[in-house]
Length: 443
Ligand SMILES: [Mn+2]
Image (cartoon, rainbow, N blue to C red):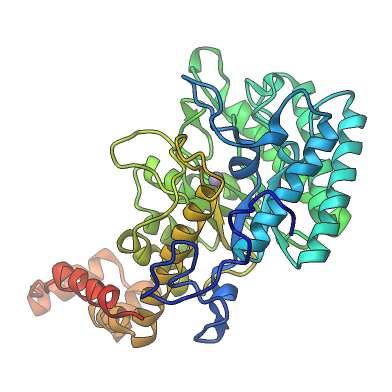
């Protein structure tokens, strides 16, 4: 442990739901066994490097507000990167979560030739490996920042210039190599600027084919170096470009099918991206689970009144529990986890605010998990769902689904039996109240 977050001298303890200590967990009892695993093993929580340590709290109207001394441009870039890393690992260790995640250029500075940037990334990830071995903290995923530098203003893989594509490919090769070196459980591809502003200058089908070729090259490199983590694409419908190609999970599934990548790539679903695409978070989970491409989650939420990506810490068990239920129903995380791709509000300038955001978010996820797991164990929703679809387990239902009935067959049967089935209640209000009962009672 280093000495940046001195107001939090010890690891955050678990004190239970009745605690009033703001620097304690009330629900995240990491060693509590729920079903077949501990809460820590179910949730696989991760802190992000970029918003938490590499973002100064600036917005389009003003400069950074946060106390992040390593971002001072007058410092030696490598020394500043090392100070930042020490603070990041101090934070994750005190928070007591098992994983972190990083962008290449949030850990390593820009500057010099491509070879020099690669050497800086290699050196700093060697140093990260030391922190990981010392603390036991693991890497949930790495990712390349392919949207920040002006060269990527018109996209990386989808850029009209193949030299930009080449630069992006080289950057991903470096980042995948160091993610492998750090034992990353996944590698994420967020298409930061893979999209368009106007069709007046855009050949969309060409750009999508470029993206398909790029992802195939990433898959090839993964197998060449022996990386066994999961490749993930992160859906987002818009921002920064007006129309992002990776709109939502269903769009990505269609893209993966077209480019023969379904067996190689899954999705990293972000709560705020799901809601921006017009879906509930739970819908995006259920879609990905149903299509066999569910991978991981970024837990940050949006604001119902704002139409952009606010990346706030999750704070509503009511809205999170139904989505966590869909994750449990799908079998839970394999290599993925809950990652805090979260931003403090710009006025949250105390060093402890970063703890408050994460503690509240983690307790929200832990409590949502306990609610969802109790509903799953009791089969409270599943037994109702089973009843609702029971007809499809009968002989006629199965014959239809096996393709053994034509429209004519069914017309003959409906005519012969004068089939006129009575409607059955969907009972939505009763089910919503049932979920609330679980939220009230879980301990
Ligand atoms: Mn994200």
